Amino acid sequence: MNSAGNSEVSNPHGRASTARLRRALHDTRPLVMGILNVTPDSFSDGGRYTALDAAVRHAEQMAAEGADIIDIGGESTRPGATAVSEADELARVIPVIEALRARLDIPLSIDTSKAGVMRAAVAAGADMINDVNALRADGALAVARAAGVPVCLMHMRGEPRTMQEAPVYTDVCAEVMAFLQERVAACREAGIPQADLIIDPGFGFGKNLEQNLALFRGLPAFSRMGLAVLVGVSRKSMLGTILDRTADERLYGSLALAALALEKGARILRVHDVAATVDVVKVCQALAAGRRAPQENREQHNDA
Image (cartoon, rainbow, N blue to C red; front, side):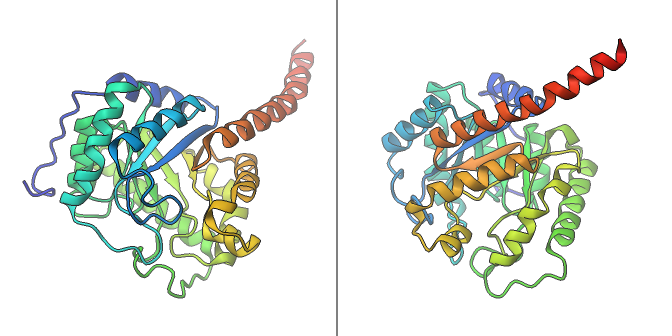
């Protein structure tokens, strides 16, 4: 059936994990989202997890390392990537979601912009929709509303095939924020609760190095929108430009940005290297707790 023609979503699986995800989103603890690309052409790990058993093993490893969410994608969105059909994307992601739902209680996210893939993935057990196109595709908004799961809305200028061809902004932070505010309003009007919305400024999606750095410096303003902010900078080309390193040599740069993102208010870190990022989160949490304790002690003293 045409993806835009029927927004009804069946979700027989994963409701316990969906509730677990909502509790985590309503908490203040930062979350680590592990990336599982079941694609032949993703920029960092394309081709490594296209076989079902390899994908399942990697997801299980990330869960054991402390991932809070597994984000499953069947279409590369790297600059210049070739589009795939809905049928091909479904063939890649649905067996993986079904296998993981049968084995793990960790929340699963579907990384897609296609309404038909969203619908099938939630029915197979996905607990979240992560859309680089912010539900702008035909039928996507209606399917997301019917799915009743959390949704991440990302900013992207253009499309993956052409997005890095001389992107131009007058004020990148203001323009990205205005876009996300508009998409949040569209979701609210469609009936998606604000508590189920997550925003992602979209690092590397239609932005050059200077624009990415300006956007990163402006992260605190996004956290003040009152929604969880997802940051995905793991191994990205902005680090390659700064460090002159290949994708698999960017761990330390990725961890530096992860720590800085948390300091600037990010709630979800989307990463390739889960174990190392979990360590970063733990250290940042310990430091944050140390900063809160003197303030709490002062407030208690004043109350006395």
